[in-house]
Image (tube, rainbow, N blue to C red):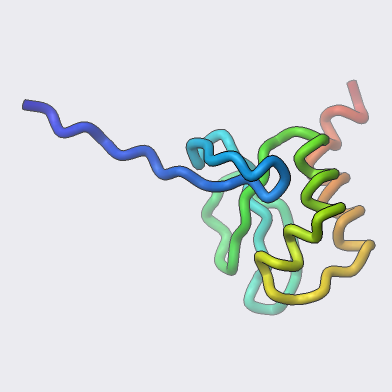
Length: 93
């Protein structure tokens, strides 16, 4: 009998839906306090997950989802940087 592999689920900061971790994008705060988008899921630091959709990013921004996850205020410039990193492929297309 094969053991069924459990798929890790994560909740999106925007839509609040749980989805498989592989479908999500991780936003990470490094031990130095720098924020970045972690497409590999391997960067060290505290992570929060978001769907790769603009609506979810906008909702998370509006509801201060990142602030709650990281328990600290987040500068508007950080949101701009994350938005550019997340959706740079859209802008080029």
